[in-house]
Image (cartoon, rainbow, N blue to C red; front, side, top):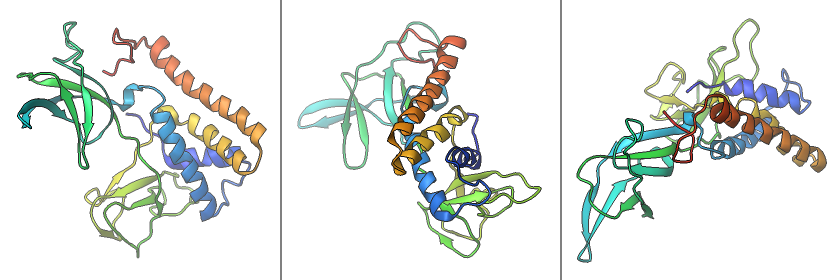
Length: 257
């Protein structure tokens, strides 16, 4: 998946808002970060973009509940919405059967219940869970715990919100996966993993966050115009996939592989 740096998206958003991209403070960063996080989820779930879809082999588990036999597939841990289950790889031929399923959730896991046992492997197609942006700038003294998130610019090798002269501005969010103090989020991958923003949303996100910013300023009519412009940019990305690249399957969704 081709990605875009958050710093690029943020800079474009700041400029649309009429703010100074070289002189903004932490509260502004947090406000626009939250706008962009919300809009990232909306874009992520707007359609079944190929970059966000996965196809995974799974096995059917048999279990007896109150003298009844049930059959289920465990939902992949990184899955958001499951769109289909097939009895074989749907892209290796034309004989794949779409298996009906029901999602039955528990406090810890979602199960995909099917009507019978499939002794061979089944194929689960799903959309990845969208990321959430909530991190604050990284620094060398703060201890970061698992589940926290930081903003780090690998160009300046710091948590600076402003680009340094002569250095590439490549700021992104990183999730902490192991308790860390003074570990470089970009290079120390045993402590941090990057939050990836799909490049296909690089033009939509600034315009959509701009609409939210206008609403926060009470400019509701202007916000509606910006909203329509943002949505048209998402539709353009769908047009590239469906019409220009011809990625339409007989199953009535965008081809993912």
